[in-house]
Image (cartoon, rainbow, N blue to C red; front, side, top):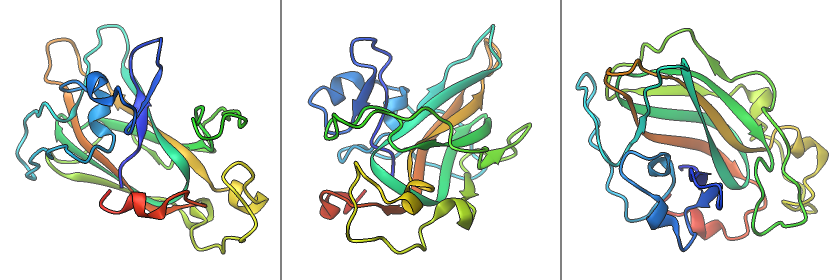
Length: 211
């Protein structure tokens, strides 16, 4: 499944969720919101070894002054992750992936729960350079002691009050750090970021069908 929200680039609405009424107005070609779930989205074609862009992917902007670009991807409900799969179409450049605590940003359904600053522990992926081929997948396995998905879920618990042992591994998103290509160079295109794992105390389990 993909993430459900990310940054909008608009200070009046910092985070946009997939089910916001304004989602489509914020989702532009080559914007980070292309990595957020949207039922009507057409997937980019990814062929291993074939490099190229796609307007329905995130084109990581080049930067003349900074060497990296960082993007958070948020979950609307707490998750325990088993793996993260990142598909890149051009100039692969993922350098780091960090887990974010739950909740990593204000959650509309939980107005009384304050976000927790992150990251949550050391990166689950870190590299000096990215050797993933164009059109290929960077698959990151989350260690079992940080995943927690094999633990039993107590019936008495909620998203606003997670049991302590689930709180230890529950995440509210991830933060990706990508190499910023030099000005004039072809940008890194990330077409999808997908997660395997489980949602804790989902309000509507059927909502995840087809994600």
